[in-house]
Every structure is written in C-alpha cells, then in structure tokens.
Amino acid sequence: MKKACVMGHPIAHSRSPMIHGYWLKTLGIEGAYEAKDLRPDEFVPFISNLAANGYVGGNVTVPHKEAAYRAVSARDAASEAVGAVNTLWLESGKLMGGNSDVHGFIANLDDRAPGWNVAGCRALVLGAGGASRSAVYAFQQRGIEVHVVNRTLARAQELAQRFGARAYGWNDLAKLLPRADVLVNCTSLGMTGKEALQVDLGPLNRSAVVYDIVYVPLETALLAQARQRGHRTVDGLGMLLQQAGFGFRKWFGGDPRVMPELRQIVEADILAKSSK
Ligand code: ATR
Image (cartoon, rainbow, N blue to C red; front, side, top):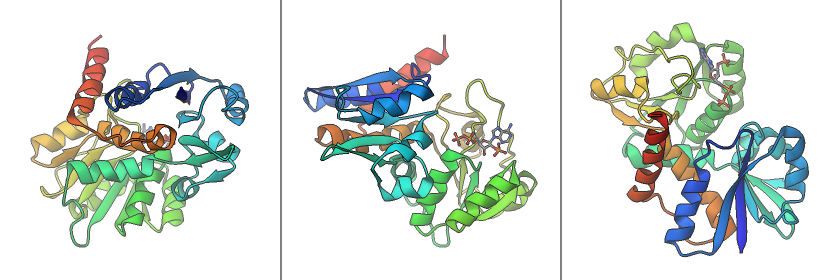
C-alpha cells in the first residue's frame, strides 16, 4: 500500500490528512496519508530516506519548506522560482521537489472569482514573506501587474525585483487601493491568535476582488469588511484545497477534485475547532 505524509513541526493542526483521506476513500484508492511531526534536525535525514521510511512522497509545511528546497535532487519551475518546496515525490529513486501553492493560489482565484482578470488588471499584494512569493509569481505568470506593500520596505523591494513587481511601504496603501482590481492579504495578520489586519477598504473600487489567504478564521475581518461593502471575496481554504491535488496525483494517481462535499468537511472541522 502506498503511503504519503505531511511533514512539519508542529503538525497536529494540519488539514492535509483530512483532504487526502477524503480522496483516497471517495476514489477507492488503497493508500494512506499520515502526519509526521519532525524537528528541523530530523527532517532532512527523514526525507533523504523517504522510501526506506515507507513513503512514496509527501507535503512539506512550516518550518521545512526551505530545507526541502535545498535537499531535493531536482525541482519544478514553481519551486525554483519561489525558493520553497512543499511537495516531494520519487522518480527513479530520486527525490523530487515541487511547489503546489503557486497553482493553488491562482486556481482558487479562478474558481471563486471568475473573470477577476480584467483588462489591465492590477493586483495589490499585502506582505512580502513566503506566501507572498507564491502569489506574486503566480500573478506574474499570468502577466498581471503587481504592487507589493509590506511593513518592511526592503523585503517588498527584494520580492518586487525578483518578479518584476513594484514595492511600497504600508503608508502608501490608501493611495494604491483605488487602482487595485484584486487585493490579496498574504501577511499573517488576521489569523486566529495574531494581530488584526487594519485596512480601510473605503478607497477600493466596488468591482475589486478581495482575497485573504488566511483560512482560520474562514472569514477574516478583512473579508467580512469586503463582503459588507459588496466586493467579491475569496478565502484561503480554497487555496489549501486547490493545491493538494498536485501531490495526490503524483503519489496515488486518479483524479482528485475539489468537490463541495470536501470543502464542507474541512470547513466543519475548522468551525468545530475554533468554537472550542
Ligand atoms: P509567510 O512565509 O507565511 O509569508 P513570513 O515570511 O513570516 O511568513 O511573512 C509574514 C508577512 O506578514 C511579512 O510580510 C510580514 O511583514 P515584515 O516583512 O515587515 O515582517 C507580515 N507581518 C507580520 N506581522 C506583521 C505586523 N504586525 N504588521 C505588518 N505586517 C506584518
């Protein structure tokens, strides 16, 4: 029986076993998908012996994505571009690395806000960390003009230079909002347990789409504000679901799809845990 796993530290919160477990069951594939808590000193030795450890591949999450990037034998174009690997698989015994967040980010936008890519579309991305890199690269691949706003201007500049975007500090936000067609939160702000993201959407055009990659809570304060103002909104859960099929196909084959039932199952789990 083929086995895959998600590797991180900590890992108990991961919804990946639920997502892959759903597909294994509904597609009738004999396989297993487990959660592995690996400390940084354990991670590289573990993936270097993935087959001997009983796995055909897996997902990589915080804090191991950069270590995975360095450890693999070969990488796909997306992971090469963003400098992080979140999916591992074996090819002729070699450890391969890919990044499914790039695809997941844009597939979710296509799915939840069809037609978002208007003529002359301009995306405004908040944040300049790892998540922003996937978003900015995905937009760049679609030929979208991107403006990056970050608290630390130097990080925004570095990211902008890498992907041909423009960089701004937080104080420029109000000035940039009126010309944005898609606004994306890629900071960690607004996540349960983190500080709130304070953005006044007043200057944003009503036709603009507002996307938050945070998915706990499912509806962040940013998305609630956007919904109340009549914007189309896109939440981060769809990105998690949309990115997962990439690895599943490599390890198990089949045709994993993001069905409404799958979304409902994961949503119910998030809601149940956040009410505790
Ligand atoms: P990830 O890999 O999840 O993107 P990260 O690399 O730690 O995580 O990036 C977090 C992002 O949230 C960064 O853009 C960070 O801004 P800085 O580059 O200035 O650190 C942003 N962020 C985190 N806390 C913030 C806060 N209190 N105010 C504004 N931005 C914040």
